[in-house]
Image 1: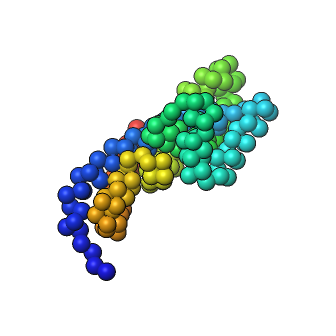
Image 2: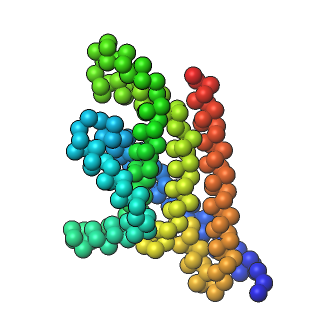
Length: 219
């Protein structure tokens, strides 16, 4: 068997259009994951037992089941239970966001716990409200400590987003598969898709290091 990329060269722009869909899913899911992750982390370190249990169970479920299963449940269950049609991309953003929040919550909790306890004690002694203390003092410091881990999660999301092909979202991988079906050559478009993902990973890694370096300079 020989490789022949000439048959798929006209289709490369079509595959490249999937980058926008992939980034849309990744960025949207990261925003949801970060917001929900912070709330879960605060529940885990809080004093309300019911909220701690909820956060722990939530994390256990989303970390203990396959992402593709969560994706398909949301895609097929929402129309069946609520009689609402949901498109593949919003489904992917929700599924990836909820899944990512379970991991991000653990990252944020570790970052909060790594902040010097003396700062929390000093803030409480000065009468600073808990919410204000977390928002203005603790969480900003924690975010600087966990930025590399958050960037790794973002990059992981970008790569894992390829599974949205199972619900026919027109991302990079789905478009490569469509091109393979049209040309009867699957390996070449898949290799092109792999190269695109690899380049995206390199770019995101570079940007992450630049952001981290910039935050260190601001200290």
